[in-house]
Length: 300
Image (cartoon, rainbow, N blue to C red; front, top):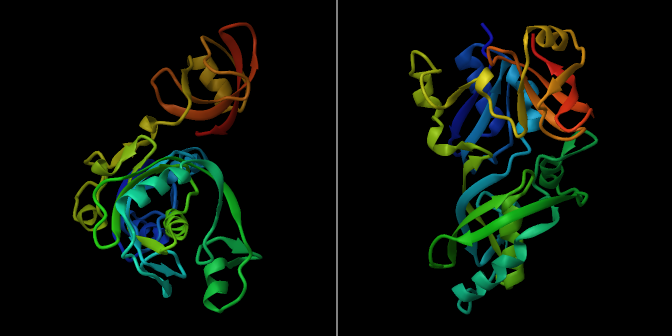
């Protein structure tokens, strides 16, 4: 049977996020599996996997801010901006001080446009950037607005390596940030290690690795499994009576009292048994606490 839930996985190094999807398809015996935010092969940590009907919630869950921990290695720049790439330039770090690094880091906090690395999975006419880069072809510049909420060191600078903690918006390339920090300091730099520890309300402490999961008789027996009805979404919840539920399940609008939010806001719609039945939007406000919900995604 198809299972509907979120599954928190601790991704190992050396595999892609798509590899995790493929392994879970075999392990759980179902095809409809996705994830909420890619991790590079060299990175480890939290992957929020969507199962069954939960795959239709990816558009909402993927927007959650992320928290990472890792290390930046100064003194060498690589073509991929991480430790898996070829070294393109080397620099002396004899004059590099921890004070200089700490002084430069706040310059990367805030909202700005970030350039995607040439070795990335972005596509142009169906071709991935890294495929073009490996063939020596020119890769077009791609910019995206990101927000870095915080960037802090978590330990001393030793042998040109700095441990750090980063909180950022979705779509942020941490290896680009490491590369740009090294360039700003004039000594080059690349991402040495990376581990994602949090995605929105989901934490790595509640995740499980693939091998231990495969050995369990019941994969749902742990905090890594979030049942469909309990999936937290980044907007308000409303509970409907029987007649309202019937209208929503038929794609019809309902009038709701004590409705939170403004026109255009999303809402998680539940029946009177708190079963998750739809995602809707506030199509119209009628007075202070009354409004109309239009169903947008309906779960039978």
